[in-house]
Length: 598
Image (spheres, rainbow, N blue to C red):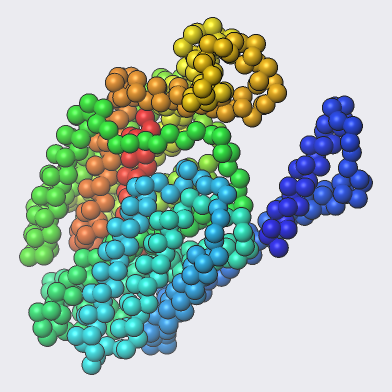
């Protein structure tokens, strides 16, 4: 069916071209009326079929996500009616279906006519592989932990990590090798399969967030029980419910808690890559467009990496001190002062850097890249949506501090920290979105260097030699001196494809020369942007490490919890913290792309 559709569209394009030539008087032949009518009908039916296919696959994903969310949240809030094993059964069924589709897709995909070079960046695929490996390790720890407690644990909890590990391994393979592909065969099945896999990732993410949230809730309740303000509550769905009787079990238990953030990040990053693959189905990419490969080079960048390393080292020291002191005595104020003080200074510097970089973009007077780029569009949407998590927490904290009757010195630090979080997110999003819509340095310089017309190129002997070599072949035994300008124009007029290849080769040579010039000397504005992007990249990494591995002062400071109530504030944090962690990782990836393309 797909091959027939593709041939019908090609016939329509040929018919339209022939009709255009007939109107211009350049041809004497004409197509029969039946062929023209059939081709036009096929081309009119193709967009409708594409929209129906997208709608069907989107509805499939939406229903799976709603069903998985309903069952997962029901198991959290009413575990007596909906046991946790029902959630595991649903996840195993979805994972098995997704693995079955990926196996079929791999066996049937033999030819990919187009690739989207903007999709599947190396940092994104590397992050998927890294987090995928950590997720498989997490499943290994889970299976080992429940095997150690097989008497009190359900058998389903031992089988589920194995199924999840197989799903993650198969999905990581597909994302690594096929994230750039624009599929043109079995479009309906491919769209539904990608949406099924994407929905499975979102349900897995929801399950991981709620499971990790239950773990944090129990930790908070244990601390409040120790202080005498609350009673301890045990939940059957939490992994810390079972008592460890051996040292190996304790290792598995600590490994599960340590690897949970990587599993959460893996599900979100995989979902974004699957969505890009879904949008690229049936897409046609111009094969003559030159896509320069960016390599990581220093470019004499010193201050950004140096300050970034200092920021990471200080942040790790404060993170360790915070965790140690909070675990021993959660009521002392010193760890909170260190945490808030470090973040206030860092967020202030990052806000100033983002503002300075945005001013440089305003000063550059360079154009905006308006070409179709689904990856960039998704990056912009994800930045804005993921920023809502920390913005939500910050605004609720500001309201709680402003209207609280009891004021403490720690509340002033919390208010300053929340305000700077809002400012930094807004300015950083402005900088990243502006940078993503700027043309790459190689494209901009190559365009400026190619503004001369063909006559100027032929007047230059070196450029004339390049034209002749590109038109007739570098290894042509005929000497280049025998070809003059008239001969070249005659050949190009007789063979337009040769002329196109000629100037494509010239563009490639210019781009290579521009890259060499850019390696030797950078514009001060570009160098300034590289310094800032590298510093902010490393700052976002340390701001990702802290909340991902357990530094949550919003749980321990107590102000918002007493102002809103435990259940309401805990629900707000469950929404905001996972999005905040994803925002930092996604921002770091975008900043790396900005550094490479500046």
